[in-house]
Image (cartoon, rainbow, N blue to C red; front, top):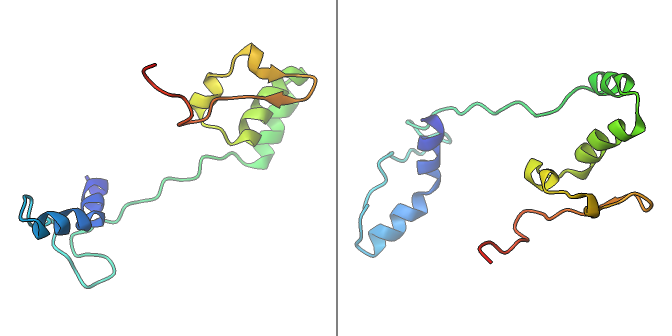
Length: 113
């Protein structure tokens, strides 16, 4: 719920636009405040970064006995790709000799065709 309220406060332009054209909703249900943080705006905790310390990363690699097994997580982490992009990689998308990997990135596939 705190994120929902914070979002409602952020989209104040939505309410302003509808008020201008005489459409509903006319008033943002969460009142404004001159303070930096509105009176009813909840404090939203930031999620911790999704990372593992270098020490644990090194330990993981030490436990892997095969270069192929080390290559997969190294590729995943260094690429910065989303999980869905990585899960869509096929064998023909890998060029081992050149050390390249092709993937379809988010938003590049035309849906429904």
